Amino acid sequence: MLVNNVTLEAVGVKMEQFPMTGMPEVAFAGKSNVGKSSLINGLINRKALARTSGQPGKTRTINFYNVENLLYIVDLPGYGYAKTSKSERESWGKMIEYYLKRRESLKLVVLLIDIRHEPSENDKMMADWIRQNGFEPIIVATKSDKLKRSQLTKHINMIKKAMGIKEDGIVLPFSSMTKQGKEEIWYAIEKALNIKE
Image (cartoon, rainbow, N blue to C red; front, top):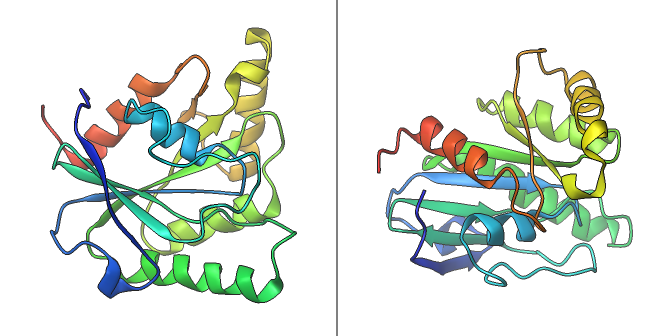
């Protein structure tokens, strides 16, 4: 997709704070510090519209980015960050659950996993939970530039096995440094939403 016009249109924690345009929404989920903001910035050709941070747990609201008046990219708070309080983690969990269950405009969920590591129990729970809410997530394996080329297939297969993805299922590697994988991710999103440019 050719992206020129993107705006952060809404930031919220409750349904009444979310946009009511009916445009399709693609939610991005992943554990804290997995590279969600970096992936979103890469997809929308911006350096810092989605705020990145070396400090996990920065995104505490649900952020809606209007892309070309065609769709919203929705940045969900990261999960599984140990240094936040239990009550804060629970409130984020409730907020994400509320959004996934209730949001009629939500058409697709992209789940990010760090390609370098075996998916965590939180990652597996999130994938199960996305499926229970009626979505088959697109799995994006972030930080692919941190591995040698020769290691990519092995690590993708490790993710597939851990996440219960069939052999012919897709895991898309992405690097925020080189933008490798960007076109493939956009293609998967456009196909899922049936967007014709």
